[in-house]
Length: 89
Image (cartoon, rainbow, N blue to C red):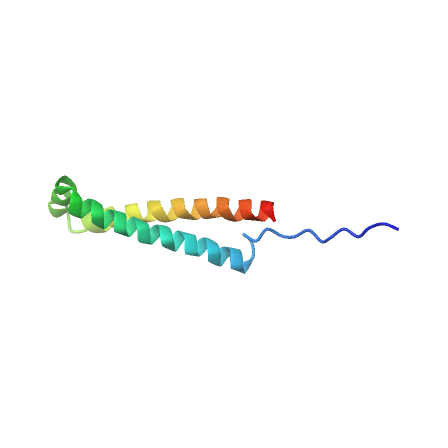
């Protein structure tokens, strides 16, 4: 008699739990990006001077670009972690 093959397990990244884990990673990255941006503005007088003398949207563009960069980086790192976790189990 043939042994039954277990059904192929879909990667947990595609499931709703995987997407929630990925969104959590992105939100943590955004929070770290926001903290880094605030620290950078407060600790570096040259950056603070550039932001002060910029246009009205300069602060917004500066903060959003750094926060987005951190969020994307954390999400990509989360993908690697989730896929590696699936491979181990």
